[in-house]
Amino acid sequence: MQNNYIEIEGFKCYAPELAHQNEGFPPDMFDLLASLEENNFWFKARNEIIKALFNEFLGVNNQKKVLEIGCGNGYVLKGLKELNYQLVGSEIYLDGLKNVRKRLSDIELIQMDALNMPFENEFDAIGAFDVIEHIQEDVLVMQNIHSSLKTNGFFFITVPQYQWMWSYLDDYAKHKRRYTQKELKQKLQKVGFKISYCSSFVTFLFPFVVISRFLKKNKSLEEVTINDVIQEFMIPDWLNNLFYKMMRIDVVLIKRNLSLPFGNSIIIVAQKT
Image 1 (cartoon, rainbow, N blue to C red):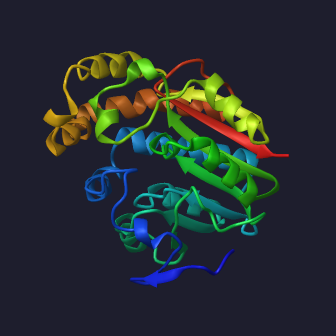
Image 2 (spheres, rainbow, N blue to C red):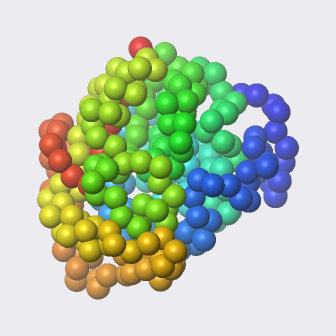
């Protein structure tokens, strides 16, 4: 790891000029998500899928060093901690890192821009979960991740799927794109990764997501408020439980190494060869 950082509020900052404001993600979302993600069906089920694939490809091993890029409030890191890895969380915003520190006080946290990563052949695995769709230069991020991994290391990635599913929620979240499996695979292979596993998820809920998204297509970004975003998460408990049970079908099938053909999201495991 490079040593060209400055320390701000107890965090090593490799891109301090971006620590409080940048164009990648609305900072008011951190506290909102921190209050919702513990019980929300999508975050819970996605975490189970991520943990299952880490266990499949990396195992439970306290010698494995794992970096999460764009760790948000640390919800995925909290799940990965159960697999006993040496965890490092990175986030471009200090607001996110402060929330991670409240949730996980005993792991290394750094502020970093994924376009300029200070690592070389350092990690056994790197994760970026619904992160690179926020970054225009996504291929450069993939190149940096490839360089930061040890030989045979794994890159775990989730992204939203299908550009035709675009709505004002993508605009508000400052997404640059949604992906197809073919596009994402090609970009990863272009920078030197081998695809070890690829699947869609949010498959059995997909008809509900399609209806919801098409109802949100005709609203301009100027009309969108934080309350519109909150409503996406603030669903009745009975509906949240139902959606979680439906996403559990995705979890079970992915644990059995099946690849789901369609859904609102993509998950890929790619290996540096």
